Image 1 (cartoon, rainbow, N blue to C red):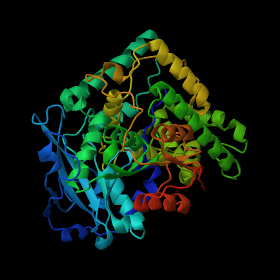
Image 2 (image 1 turned 180 degrees about the vertical axis):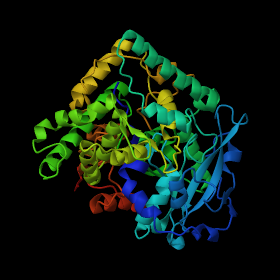
Image 3 (image 1 turned 90 degrees about the vertical axis):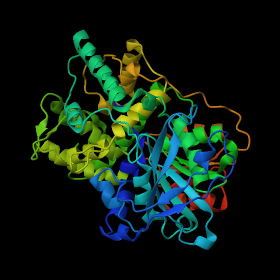
Image 4 (image 1 turned 135 degrees about the horizontal axis):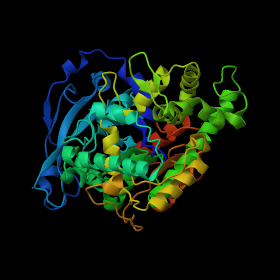
Length: 530
């Protein structure tokens, strides 16, 4: 079956930002952050029965105890950031039954006398760490009005990263083993075995996480958490930046709390009404478009791993990676590069043209029998740290999508989706038989909680949607649709990359900052060159 690509920014489109932001600090910087209790809420409307959450005190302190990976520990050492834990109900229908906590990271505004409030960011996924994204972006906003006049706040959504309890389905060893599973048996018995593995995954998620947590992990709950956060941070209205799947969270918030919105930048839009199967196929077409752009770029190089004929690169690519399905490459550290890892590495690099050099380098190494570069890229995508530990990005992704999206329980439909996906993305067609088997969501122990988007949103101010013409993961058409549904202003970026705001494009950055600071939207039909 096609790989369901994650729409996330923290480790993909913003990877360069995060790496740049994580390496310029010393281990002792956080020692200067002294714990302090702050109560700025309640602010704005407070739903009945939730008063203690909206008015809660937050203890801001060193971020030392919040990192869940070695990479995060380095990122969180910046002396300019501080962390806190916020309490929310697991089930908003029963606010007194069980509480959970969310991790927050804040980079305070530098011009206190001109401070407007907080700007909350979510990098997408679903399941990516907003705390890590905010830590990485702190350097990007240091010298502009966004960093001067807003506290930059990133949060780990419920079940993710520093938020507790976490969603956890597989152990690190089980995740490594899964990445080597090729599923090459396409017989009825093989399909049954694959479905048994999917069911086992859902069962492990339930037993290791809890069905009550899985039932309350979706975007509708995260949107309610956002409103608690708005009040606890002391803001009458929410200012928000959502990337990729973070646009879905923003959309759900705007639907449920239209009068509580000050401003939103929704970058790399998820179509709020698209069937998930059609969404997947559109995404496949987006990655094919990005692969074709890479092929044209590569064909001009003397060292192109896929040759100089850009029309043949899909076939050359499959000839290069397909043997890994039967015989993974043994690496120097004892691990093995599988076919799935090689494809994942390519997907990782297609999120941004800035990563094409790495892709060509990895494919050249593969052609010579090596796989370290591609494995490193695949590890990055899968959230595997240098210490061998995995973040829970994959498990959180599955948990959220299984309750946010309609499920497919018809194997014939699944086979049709596979066929259409291969047609949309021929570079990912390995030539194997087309079969349809049920995924983990078909066996999920919690019901779908998402609902159709309401059309009438009284009191919602004008939002800004940023959409990129060559975005492989969230196609431009989805941005056009979201802007129309929300009656938002659309800013188009002409480039081949996933998302654009605060990624170094002066035109996009200036337009987004002017909107967030002064509520000034770009002109109708505004475009920015890549």
